[in-house]
Length: 398
Length: 237
Ligand SMILES: Nc1ncnc2c1ncn2[C@@H]1O[C@H](COP(=O)(O)OP(=O)(O)OP(=O)(O)O)[C@@H](O)[C@H]1O
Ligand SMILES: [Mg+2]
Image (cartoon, rainbow over all chains, first blue to last red; front, side, top):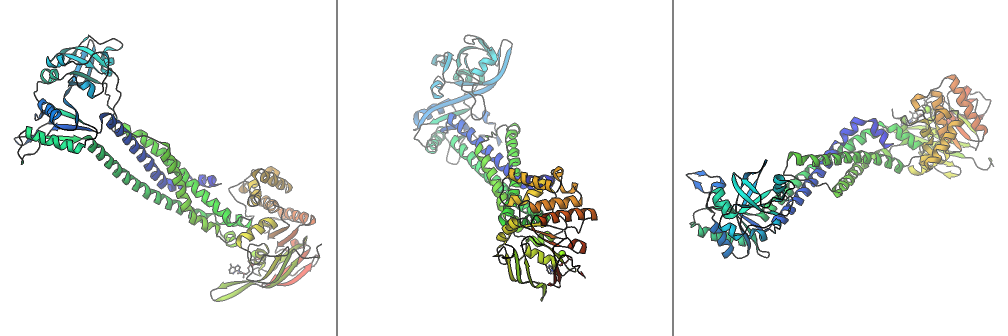
């Protein structure tokens, strides 16, 4: 019965539902996005460790011109060694030198990230070599042109073949493959952690990049130590090592992963507050729209109500009839809204590649129930009005 | 049995409407007894209070003053819901303008009183169909009211009035919108019902129709001015 009257006024009903549709759609999409981003960050920080500090060169000014970060040369290998030796609470320190290069084997040709690492990198990053062996001290000291391949690179270049012992060319320099790493999978940030080639640190720094500084230092803080304190110790150490006077700014910058995480969480909660607000407003507007249309419907159907009452319908019979109708209206709006929200959640990652969405059942059920509740709440007044109609006057209504 | 107590008993019933500061008496002291099985025609000039009286008799309205005993029970001051249940159980209505719901078919229209009587869907349909057949519209069950002629619509309305087996049928000018042929058909149905012992109260303007009834009651200015049995031709105006 409720459906027939909604069907009979298709366009009107749809417009009425719009507020609910938008409100519910916004909530569903927002929750999916929030959950997606949360899952992603927990993933990536779980692996990378929220306990990682990244030290970058910063703000060196050269005749007033800010230089590109890779061109800044403030960080040295010795800085990394000093941090490892002198700062308390530091578990691992990795000086980073890396670049993207064209890598060739036979006719195969890929572009991948090549990173210079020291032998200790194996333990620090819990890497296992499934085939061959890892970079040795000897290789590092002698700047040998040897390479350990990530699984993706190995497959892209060699397919089914065993790459160990084969010769590849990285940026046109010959390297011998000495090992293949076990698959690590995608990081939470969506990047393929197996799409990488590791070469000895010195080889990368001196032979490939031809630099004496390093691009970045990754510091893993030992559990139980505060990132803030460790960070401060590093700042003090580096400032003194770089002979900075009190008036000079730092020539490096520490990026605290947990701070990034927190920033992201802040952003997400602000965003979700905003969307919740929009959703609340549009649900309110939707509810009022439903109330309005139900009022119109009650007036239009005064005679019908009179007939029903004459035939024995009680107050609650009529009340329930109209409440069901407004709940069906808002419930359908809710379902359309959920579908819209899910559709948005599916589409967003294609438009904004960094954004991940995760659709879960709970918010869908909750928002559906909520939209029904809106229908119930805003249906009460019109339904009461209908139920209270005097049968004689209602029958006389033209 | 019938002599014991009348099924309808009105005493000193008044219906007052306030118009501005003035009180208008649509009914001004009505006493009636209608016994079970009677076929009473209410007559009278326009504005005399027939419909007002019918509404009170049909429990659609309450008297301002006075007592109304229906089957011995005082109903003059029942609550809205109690009146609704009384209507549902004891009274079947037939209106001048049919008052069918336009968006549902004949069968569902007939079944409506059973819905409010709390009867299950299957039984509702079966009973409704039975009563549609009884008024000769078994083959029109799936028709919407606007696909039926006036006479057919009124037959659907009569089926609806009968479906919950009320013992009183109230009809306010049931043939007012019908042509002569349909009027005859409808009146035959009413006479059939009367013969089966149902109490019928019918408002009409037409003396020929009032002739079908076993009793004629003339209302004038809110009071009963004449009350007579069959065969007495009443002067309406
Ligand atoms: N709701 C109301 N408010 C004020 N006056 C009313 C109301 N209902 C009826 N009346 C008055 O009561 C009187 C009786 O009206 P009623 O409808 O009972 O007449 P009736 O005999 O059925 O007339 P008709 O033959 O034209 O149908 C009329 O004067 C009418 O104006
Ligand atoms: Mg009338």
